[in-house]
Image (cartoon, rainbow over all chains, first blue to last red; front, side):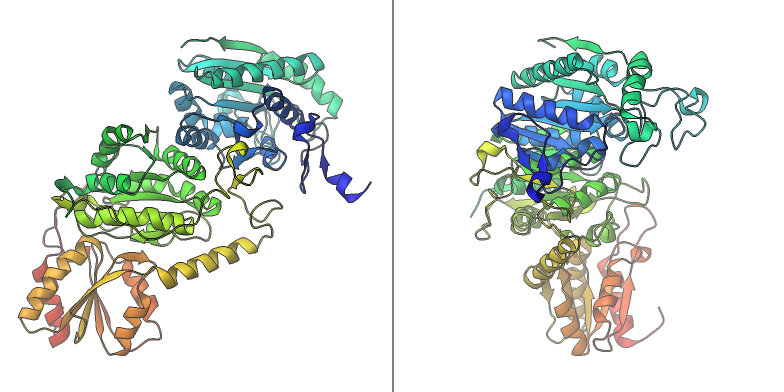
Length: 257
Length: 370
C-alpha cells in the first residue's frame, strides 16, 4: 500500500467528504466512534450543509474527529464544548448548524452543569454524547455512566453504589429539561440501529435548523480495548448489559417547547 | 469635543467596548463588577450585539473563546473568584490564539476576600494565571476616562496579536463616578481574520476548512511540530514587549526617588509627588499603563542614572518582584515598598494616602527609621 493510500481515511463513504488526513483514524479496532463519525459525515452530506456546519469537540477518544471532518471545527477543553458551541452559535447570530461531539465523562461528568444550563436556555445546538461506560483516552477509569459492579481502573472492585453511586441517564435527564426539543439514546451495534441513529441525528439537525430548541443524542458505543473484550464480545456486552441499563429510544421529540 | 457623560468606571467598560465595535458580551454577576454586566444587558442588544448571562465564569470564558473563534469582537467582565474560574479558559485561549478582552474589576482575596478596593490580582494577570507557558497583555487604567480608552485599545491589541487582553480595573475606579468624554479612538490597520476565523467553510475566502484548536504540535495544527508553538509564542511576546510598552511619567528629570505605582495607587501617587515637590523633595513617578509588557527599559535607565525606587501597591507586594527582576544587574538603586500594610485604616475601606507616601519619600531621601 502506498503512503498516500495509507493516509486515506475511511470515515465517510460519501464522496464529498472524503478527506486525506496525516493523522488518520486513531481509534482502536472495534471502536464505535468512527462509525458515529461516518454517520455525522453522511447526515451533513445528505443535508447539504458542509459549508454551514461547525463541530465542537472536547477531550476524549470520541473527540478525535477534527482532523477527519472536511468542515469547520473547534477542539476545546474537557467539559467545555457546550459552552464554546454556545459562543459560536450566538456570535454568528444563529446562522450555522453547530454540534458538539463529546464522551460521557466530558458531557455529563465535568461538563454536566454546562449541559443542563444550555438545555435550559433552549440553546440551538446539538450535543452528541458517546456513552461507552468508561473513560477512554485516559485508559479505562470509572465514568459517570459506568454500570454497577463494572470493574474499571478506578473502581477495581466493581462500581459499588454505596461508594460510587449510580450511572447517570443523560438522555432521560436532558429530556426532562424544558428547553429540549429532542433527546434520544441510540446505538450503532447493527445496521438497523445505524439507520435509526442516522435518522435521529437528522431530526436533531433539522430541529436545530428550524430554531426549535436544544437537541441531544446519546449513542452507546463499544470499547473493546478497555472493556478487555474482543470486538464481537464487546458488541454482545453492549447489547446485553449496557442496553439493559440504558434503554434505546426517543425520550423527547417535540416541535414546540 | 465628544459627548460628555457622568458614569461609573464599570459602565465606562461598556462605552469603550461598543465604541470599539464589540459584538458580544458573556458574563456572570459578581460584586464589584455588576454594573458592567447590567450595562451590557441593557445597551448591547439595542446596538445589535449579543448579550448572554452564563451559568458560571468557567462557562463565560468558554463562550468568549467560541465567539472569538468566529472573529467576533468579544468581551467579558469579572472579579477575583470569577477570574480564578476563568484561568482554564485563559490558558486555552492562549493556545487557540483567539483575540478577546477581559475586564477584571479587582476585589479582595484570597478566597472571598472583600468587596472593596485592592490590587491583589497583579500576579495572576501579569504572569499568565492558568497552566502553561503564556502571557496576557495587561492594561491598568487609573480613571473612568482611561478605562474607556484602554478598553478600546484592548480590542485593538487583542486583534493585532491574537491574544487575550486584560483591563485591570478595581472596585475603586470601577464604582467611582467621573466625567467621561466619548471619543472613538483609532489605532491603525489590523490583520484580516478571514484566514483563521471559524465561520463555516462556505464563508471563507480560501474555501478550505478552518480549525480552532487548543492543542498545537500535531500534524494539521498551525504549529505542527511540538517546539514550534512555544517558539512562536516566544517571538510574539518579544514583539509585544518591543512595541507595546505604555506608561505615564511625572517629574523624572531630576528625581532621586522614583515612585512606581499602577492603577488607583498610581493616581494617588501623583498627588503625593505634587506635595513632595512642593516640600522640595526630588520625587518622580512612573505609572505603568501596560503591566505586561512592563516598562523595564525606562526603569533600568533611571537606575543607571542613580535613582532609587519606591513601589507603592495596594497588596502585600507583587509588582515589586517585577521591579526587582528588572533592576537585577542594572545600577545600584534601592527598592522600597509601601504596601497594603501602610494603609491609613485597618478597615476594608482604607487606603495608602498621599501623606503616607510623602512621609516615606522623606524618610528614604533624608534617611531615618521606618
